[in-house]
Image (cartoon, rainbow, N blue to C red; front, side):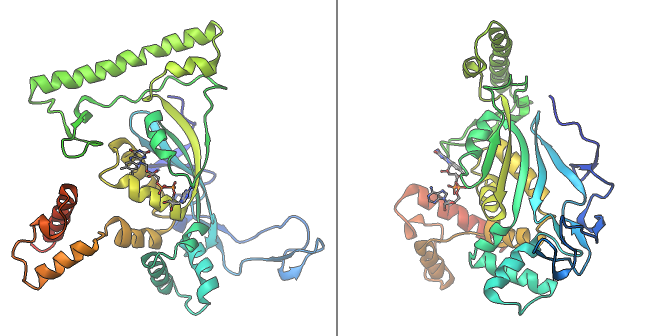
Length: 356
Ligand SMILES: Cc1cc2nc3c(=O)[nH]c(=O)nc-3n(C[C@H](O)[C@H](O)[C@H](O)COP(=O)(O)OP(=O)(O)OC[C@H]3O[C@@H](n4cnc5c(N)ncnc54)[C@H](O)[C@@H]3O)c2cc1C
């Protein structure tokens, strides 16, 4: 696979390519001197170009720790790399959370300024779905993923995307092929899902089925040589590509604000999302967590790890707590719909886990 060449070090599974040596925001170079183009640098003074520039009164650090790129490899040939973000520079000791707090204080005033108060403010904002301050942080990723993952990903419409053009260039020879022990069976409970794995180590028939599946992908991959040959014979790239399979890798730049990125993560880390896009979402979370730690902590508490209860479910829970219902698992308390009853049962199971 042709990946960007990285002069990189690897920490916590993240490859960091450097402009300098630092790898974490706390170790990042301090930027103490700024040289604005034109005019005089100063604290609020108006330069000769008529622009008033304010220099920071504390040292600034790069939230990406001086790295030009932080990459995690995903699946067999894919990767996700954080290549830029906004804010990139923040006062020493802070993170990109500072931009959220700064925006929120436009509406709430300057009353709270300490770091622990920043955390409280961020938690309040996220809990009460005051979402716009989270749009003040922007994240830009370079992603290489199979086309079938890209098709799910592109449904998140609030991002800005620029994709590799297979009309302009030949697609590189990169196909996603899961290992035998990663082949999933069709779920019986969820028509969209594939959860249980084929028992390739202790069931000969299941091993054979998984092998047949991988062989089928190999056969499809064989079309790549014909694709190349047809383009060499003069078939346009835009036509030749239409016979290629969706396990082929594509690449794009994907830029999104933090609010909508968190929505993407909520939907795509969820167990209902397909395993392959989940792998990218989990890597994305790992990349952004150090950039906005208070926000990610609050999101884990109030969104990812939270549970939504319907009015009917709350009433059933109230009856349960009051002791007026002997059978909480009786789905009829909640709904006459079988799927809703199943969802209620799984919520109860999750709640019960903490009580044992
Ligand atoms: C497990 C799973 C299964 C799925 N299955 C299918 C499927 O079978 N078929 C299918 O077609 N899709 C499917 N999807 C895609 C899904 O329907 C959404 O399109 C996708 O998750 C993007 O969500 P979103 O619209 O909230 O995100 P974004 O497009 O990023 O939008 C974020 C938010 O912005 C707002 N917004 C964005 N655009 C508009 C708009 N035009 N008008 C009003 N508000 C807007 C909405 O509040 C939205 O929630 C599935 C998604 C998941 C997670």
